[in-house]
Length: 485
Image (tube, rainbow, N blue to C red; front, side):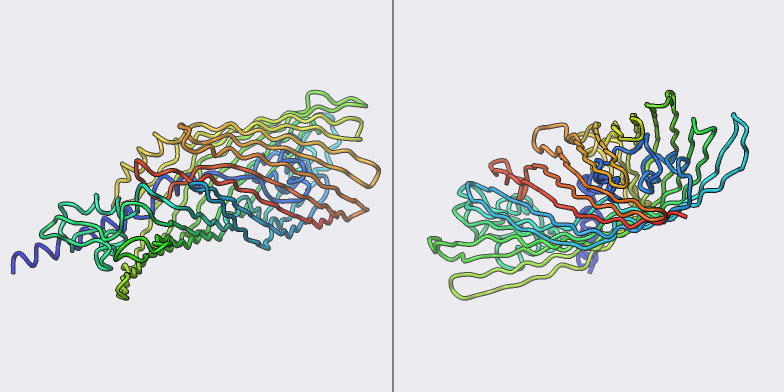
């Protein structure tokens, strides 16, 4: 009876520990801390380099001082079509997949309240705005396949299982392998694998959906058309769903006994947070043919409260016709994430109201992200965040040429790698362009943004495993309808 109770307690602890450490890790912290630029079509077409320009709703999420530049009330609405493609190469075998998504990149309203103070040194207006900006899109599909002569996922599970009783194995992975006879025991806690250590076809498909978007409430003011100040309270919301399927197979029927196995994983994450943003814009030069504006903004960390659920399943098949299946319990955990602070410096040059050239520099240190929970320390996960990630320097450039009622725009952005080592590149480059037409009280803008990044992806952790090389590209088409009154 005592032994039975002891085994029950140990098994329960194994389940609890597995549920708190299976999904929440340094990868989650990076995913939800890395945000791009999104919002209106004009903002996107100019590479997001709007920190010193202002008068665009997207700036409420970057430099809130931009709200002070508005002279009239304005409503904007931006539908978008997003397409992501991922090409992979694993051990010489190439594969690719893609996914489409229709979304709303922006909807927002700004109210401009003039003070009617005509004194030279006075506050000209106080402006208020609220709405939604979308700045991360998780919709993607990845397909990786190739032959591996050196190892199997079961090589990892076999090492992890040695010395552990079968009913105390990890309930989301290793125990599933034992239940489906991919791992078996010689006796006691010594295990062997029924899967060969290499010489197999490996394949993994990953489908992700979801987004990060932010509800913003901003207040700003205009002092003498020379100095603008603003602040934003942001309430970001995120949802992320990942469904993956990993398989190994004796594709040429050269291995006795083993036929194939498939390991399915599903993760759902959702949550909300809050942050504060503060910014200024100053106009040091304002003459007839030239206006120079400089801007600066600081973002506090975003304090997220997240809920994550996950589960896994394993199927096995053998040459003798036997098939086995095992499902994990459903894992669920509530935790917190503090994303890093951000600092942005900007400059814009306007030439005779005929055009604008602008640049933003953004600094963020991803090693400062932290996972938190009341009942779990996250010591190991936070140590990995500090060990793997570093400060990132992002540069955004934009230009606009005005021809009467028509505007032509272009942009470029580069986001540096967040990784300390060369295991992953992670650098992302964005090219964008678009045009706009403005009429009295109405405008319409179009934008297209193309992004490309490269990363190394490991199917599992093993010393002799080669990474899959991933090239990720995306195409984003936006149209903003705007009304001024």
